[in-house]
Image (cartoon, one colour):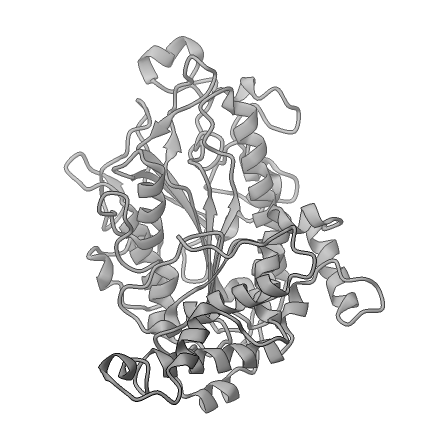
Length: 476
């Protein structure tokens, strides 16, 4: 995986700005940025209008405990006395923190909240649970792996990796490849891998490892690029043309690099970096706008901006400003907890879920120029590479477990709905008639590719690349 790493010890940041600029440019090579459009058409199209349909893919890093999140159990039924029988121990009483309930959260019991068909584990928290009316929870997904890299890449692409090597394109790449949105940067991948195995460079994600990388990429550098790639390209100028050099010519990497470079400079000329400068001082350009964002996401320091809440604000800004159509983001981590994990998992998940709740609230309250709110035009998928075991190990933690669940929200998705379930013995993945969601001992497992096919189908896109049918009861 290639990452843009910020050199925190660089006093000027110029060299890093050039490296980030080059990496961003190289990430788009192979075609023009915007749907294969000619450069002039691209320049006319980059008017910063939000995409009519937006997508957010939210990754919780490390393998989440689903008893704390989207597949809870009643602790009065699944007691410690019955754990040898059920192979399930919720362990809510071991969290030992008054911020967390000792039982599943039912939104219907919250003041001012309507009737929910979904119950949530204590880590989800009331802020996200209040948005149950936008959600479908998919339970009992069979990951067919206990490996971090394999499960992670499986959910990114909807294809089981070969060994640990990813196979196929990322879902965001597939969406951009089909829809060819007229936005400056169609897809942003924030500290998450991205793959493209069948589309031109226009479908590639701009990959950044932190917000500073995104700002540096959009801002660029006033100095000339001094990259090795550019030097190699320049070396071919004025030289006799041979077969090798022709590969860098009119139909080769030289032209596509030049196109990408010019398009990146156009993007940089729009000052998009200022949209993400959340801590800008008073009396500076965009200061009033940034103050509103700071208030919405409770951003008071650089740590906040680089943490979960700042990442959520980055996603909202990219969509609402019309900068991107798809954002894939590593929202929170620290979930690979095999030792004393109950409170650690609860705290780390809660930070992610609270940030997600802020994002959803922002999108629900923001009007989309095509009508309705941004949430009416946005589909969100929340996932992790697998879950944790339903029994607590001898070290007070949980290990890797095959069964998983996912959250879908927003446009094209049925709301206030649960599809699938895990077993009441050991939370084993269930088998279902996938046409209607009914439990069926002779049925099929729900797999990540079913979830990916459903996301694609929710926007009317071709899902045949997944080689499965979508979960049609989930589709709005």
